[in-house]
Length: 427
Ligand SMILES: C[S@@+](CC[C@H](N)C(=O)[O-])C[C@H]1O[C@@H](n2cnc3c(N)ncnc32)[C@H](O)[C@@H]1O
Image (spheres, rainbow, N blue to C red):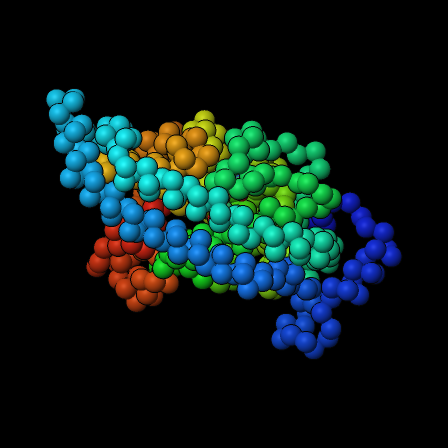
């Protein structure tokens, strides 16, 4: 295994490197980090005034749906849908599946769903034109980054890699081409669409707005406070995307080597260039987390965020087993995910499962119906080491209240109000 090896993307010819170097290396002295002389892959993304206005509209529409329309939908359930269901079934809705049946024909649910679905599609559409205009320059910057690695990270792309169907055959989240489509040589387009689109997606949400690595930041601070003697030397993020929920571990564990794997090459190329430019060394490689090429016991900490709900439960089980193989003795896994049904009330479970039926995430409900600690135990972790809980979002909750939360002196905010559901285990 060559975890620090140069990119597998194949050598460029010398003149080609020289040309790119001339165009894309920033002139000496033009930025504080002059050792990181790679151009910023975000610079070629220049939305026009109208495009920015459209993006803001989409963020505001999402906020309107997720807050105002959600309130109206709940009012419709309480005022009529529940009673109608009770009358026709002889009992009130007993769980979130019954609530879904009760709401299927509700006008409020249909309006909520139609608006939310359109906002979801428009999220990615609203960034695609500026991504397309900037694409040739972004590809050149990413290619430079793969060869220069000025921050000391690395990128491995496997030209023979076959992404699993559950990612490649579905436009997950309505992202055209999902996370894996490559339409041109060394393509980064989907990575750029996901990176910029997620800003639009989260633009109206106070706990995620302007903080793309909020999950990693929160989990890393939690670990540091909860386990002060735990000092991971190597960290692996499964399904890292562009690495935005991997990079913040460097702030909390500056000596750790950070690795990220994903099945989508465009996101890895984009993220590698992004963080090399920022001086953050990440070792990114294209791999299926179900079976990786890292040796046994290579990592002290394995994490993920927004990951397991997008795959069949059988794959989740394989990945947790592979996590265990990859952990050194005493090592920990900590995965952030959607809260399972058992952790929220039935109405909340019905709302959370919206994505299963409407957002091209067909395994979502099945995943949420699992018990994460039981999945960890089934993967071979000692049950006594398996845990699951909500933790506050570190930045919005505040460092001092967060420390009190870890000591057990206060509770995490309710789900949806600035908390993350996480589960973990120790080897
Ligand atoms: C919703 S995204 C989350 C990305 C990132 N963790 C974040 O917090 O933004 C899920 C990611 O998991 C990747 N993925 C899905 N199945 C995978 C697998 N079996 N192995 C590695 N990556 C996978 C997808 O390509 C996608 O980039």
